[in-house]
Length: 535
Image (cartoon, rainbow, N blue to C red; front, side):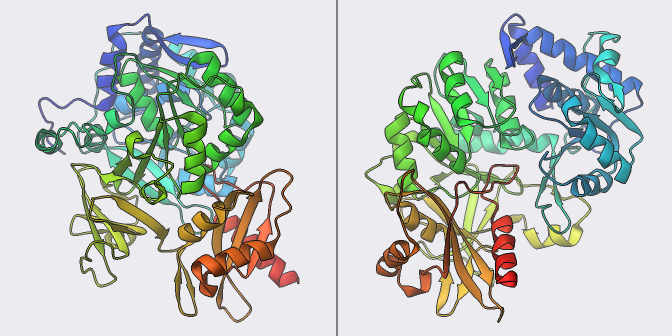
């Protein structure tokens, strides 16, 4: 059993301490409900006692099937207080994939949002679990809120240990076996920059970035007001923790809708927001963006997939100097930040980068043999820090492929320049191997997006009947556009050469997105392959 560090406190305990400073303040807003810090803390402790009474113990897995509910955040905190690992399912995965994950992580308890009770019934039918609890009345399970109401609000003492797994986040899962990424309570503190090594690094370079959490919120006295409109099972959940710790307020929406997001920014005086690039583009392209008061925004963080310099420049012109790009991975933790002062619409080469590497993170660019490459050369981005994952759940061989000698191999292709800026050009698995070389999809997307009639694009490889990979693109054009394939092909030939020219360009009303909000290249690739098979 791991030795308990005398002064170790989990991120949950620290957040509950912060919530206790001003218990009357507004902590969470959800569909007309305004929940105080004191009421939220009380719910967390009551839930912990209720889970404990149901036989939930340290070291077990609690799986959530839930939307963006305050109760889902509270039950995650409660389970972590007990010392459980929490696995939050992506809601848009198929039921059989969700069932595979539930079974794979050895779920002791499934906690269900009543809005997903029918899906839960299907998942349980495929992967039974000992206990099913619900966040309100539902057709399946026992109402955890009723159980919690019967419990004491006295603090539940944390049973977690630094090296216990506190979260299992899944990546993949659309095909094949989902990969569960394990993070410990100690690593959650590393995310906040609380370890000794990071404090020493910050002392050596105090102006570089400060704490990672601080880099994601404004450095001023006004408490942040965060709008969450992407799933709390992903990066938004970490931002919720950071904002609650900073005595801020979290406003929860069930999903992303540009009109609703804009009106909420104005009504709730939102200061902080996280969006994946495709959602950011939808926001600034919406007609309401021109007439909505977004002056309260102090920081709009974007990341999670490649962004277009041309579209980011559009966002700067629309929203002002509030954009901050964050690059990281569940496997590798936070890696780099492009701060607002680096967001200059007249410097697209800087907007193309992912910013400077965080001071407590080491980055190496390596070739296939593991040799470190000089500045400017393209290779795999490898990362070493206290935030890299413990490993993949029950997949030791895959863990050994990604974690080697203390370094996380990200699978991203990129380069470092002489000024210390990191640029990502592609995913190794997305890079298209064509006759004559490699096509980096993000570079081609940047070029397509530079056309004044293109709003969004994504590029992917599709194998033809001879198993030769061909370049394909899906493009969203501006309203009223008369753009044709040949015009874009000509642009690509002129700027990048025939090697980059797409074999096929499909014009779509909107790009399909994954549950996390990234362009779903797998779905587009399947559609293209099916069309080729029936042609």
